[in-house]
Length: 399
Image (cartoon, rainbow, N blue to C red; front, side, top):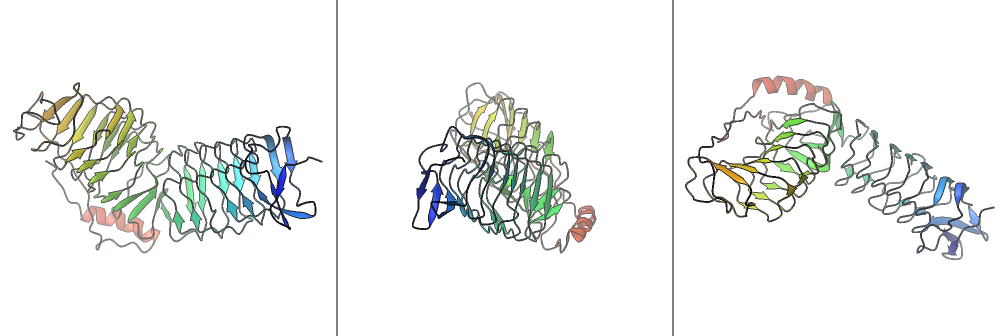
């Protein structure tokens, strides 16, 4: 019988591991089974770091375990995990950077996992949630590059920020929850005013009812090459186009948001052209970062401030500006600035323009007023999308 390092929590309960040492025993290999009792006391907790880095391939837990603490299976080689029915807590980074492929919580009664970042950077391909679950934590599956399927169970009412960012292979999403509606593969909120998750293999247009894009996943990891926004989005979260492997051109001129959050365009290796919304006033720290081929940036007339680190680890060589006033911030000496004939100042962001004859391009935006378009069902939403898009098209000439 395998012996385990453990501590006595109280007169009735045992914790596996002391909560301080990574991997309770380097001798643990292959398949192991955790007993339900030790010294006539019930084993109820897997301690912090208990199997962190352990070379075990599978583990069977008794139906007495109520908590799996922080970092418990981090870097662990367990590939398939079935949670015991008694489990109520899954701690921070519990399976982060682990070799886990499948995680099944369907037999538990968990409502909230009680931690965050549980599966970040793991090899997870499939996860099954219990029907009792009400929340998915923040950063839950960030950078789960092999996750392909996701089922949102019926009682989930909240999904935390960045829960599924950088999930490059997330293609198939279903939802039983009335709070998350899947239409043409894309996940929206109840009234289709918020877009939450855009799957990696998708190319569909956003519904014209959308006014916000949340930070659950947004377009992160999407397999798009060219994206043109055609509706008046008012709010966006961080990591809007984070780690999109094939995106080359992004045109957001139809957007109506004023601030560009951190990480909006991050680690897009093929991105070369970026058009920002005409409404943008602030480019915040690291809004545009690690896009090595990004050489052309189009700045709107509304822009007021570019943070000192607003654009970093990119190779901007050409900046085109549609406004008539200078913008707070300094461009690199190597950047060539193009302005319109209406720009009367000698310098723009510290650089002397090389061209004063730039003509701002026009853009066509489709816009539907919120009070015109109200979806009561997915079917109705699909019908109204086609009908109203035909009837209510407004052309905005962006100068």
